[in-house]
Length: 119
Image (cartoon, rainbow, N blue to C red; front, side):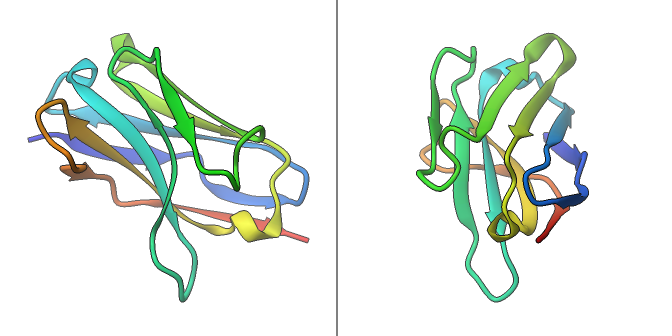
């Protein structure tokens, strides 16, 4: 059973930056593809970015492309989401998730970390 714990959220002004971390325990992170998702108040959870097991492939939602960067350090069992040029519409709870190579869906989810961007 993999446990994921996000950190790094907070309050930032528009145009600022934050880096979210997602630390895994109870499993080897390199066996999982990783993703970041977010959910704003009153909205459904949406995909933000994903990265392959070894980090060679990344994919982003159009809304964050060019501003956010997903990365991972398998030696530290940690995935990251660097968020630059933040906008008020990026305000949401951000979740990381892990997907096994044999699965079409994300199996493990963190508890989320709040990101609030003020205008």
